[in-house]
Amino acid sequence: MLSDFDLASKCKMHPYRPTRGMALPVFHDKVTLVTGASSGIGRALATALAQQGAHVALVARHETKLRELERQLASLPGRRLVIPADVRRPAEIRQCVADVLHEFGRIDVLVNNAGKGFCGRIDETPLEDLQDVMTTNFVAAFLFLQAIIPSMTRQRSGLIIQMSSLNGFSAVPLASAYAASKFALEAISESARMELKQHNVHVLVVRPGLTDTSFFDNAKNFRAQNPFPMTRFMSADEVARKTLRAAARHRRELVLTVDGKLLWWLKKLCPRLVERILGRYVKVRPVESPADERANRS
Ligand SMILES: NC(=O)c1ccc[n+]([C@@H]2O[C@H](COP(=O)([O-])OP(=O)(O)OC[C@H]3O[C@@H](n4cnc5c(N)ncnc54)[C@H](OP(=O)(O)O)[C@@H]3O)[C@@H](O)[C@H]2O)c1
Image 1 (cartoon, rainbow, N blue to C red):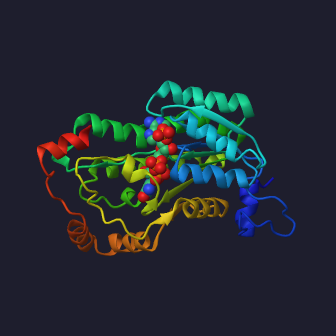
Image 2: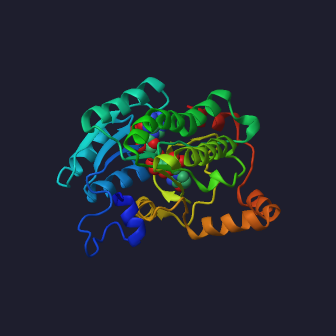
Image 3: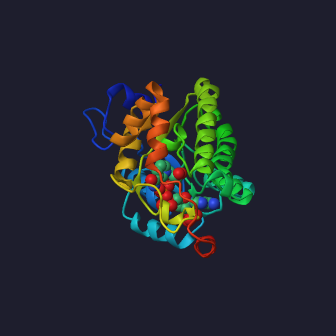
């Protein structure tokens, strides 16, 4: 029998607009787990899923933000489960998956979205910051896959959404640790897609461009000012809407923003030109002064 995901992809259905003969949106009654649900893209995705009637497990460190979101979504169909967890801790990841399986009996959709940024040249990146970014953006996603795959393969269906970045295919100066974590995320996504196809588990890689969230405020930055040009943002709601539409259509990957799509093709066709442009685009100045550096570190 075809799953709702299969039907939606065959009908090319818009997930928000029920079509004739299909009264419910694609994610209605699906059990979903969204990491990084306390703000930005994760929060918007959790909201969009709830609007479609999904049950949503909300995962992040800040419990008060998750509770506030839970309250805001209370009038929507489906149930919510708040799970405060630090995804850098493997035991908390295992417990989180166990809690969702205990509460709902299955997990249909995993959104590996929790992430953090880091801004600094390679020679000024402390080992602990490199490890922190890799653990949050890559190792945690890997461990969530490990924890969830057995139940998805048993139920012979599932969808995994990996929140990558334009930096998942194109690194930029001052973001080597972040780009490395997203390149690694892309690699496990490809492996997962090949390993899980036979079990009817699909993998969607999403690569947002600049998105209007707290991401850059939360990113550790050794400079007094953000060196990345902050223009042409997409809203988190739009990222969420496009992500769920791509998922409903069985897309394998999604590159967002006009700039992102241009970068995708330029990178394939003329990588040297891309490096030249990006090298000028991002201002690789040294840190302003030892005092600035100390202020930014604290
Ligand atoms: N904004 C952009 O321009 C942009 C562009 C491309 C890709 N992305 C990607 O999109 C994803 C979401 O980012 P965003 O823009 O929505 O940023 P954001 O507003 O800063 O949200 C990041 C989320 O990750 C959670 N998180 C961070 N560290 C965590 C940890 N150790 N344990 C559990 N949760 C953790 C945060 O929750 P707590 O602090 O409550 O734990 C928060 O909910 C990230 O993977 C990011 O790399 C963003």
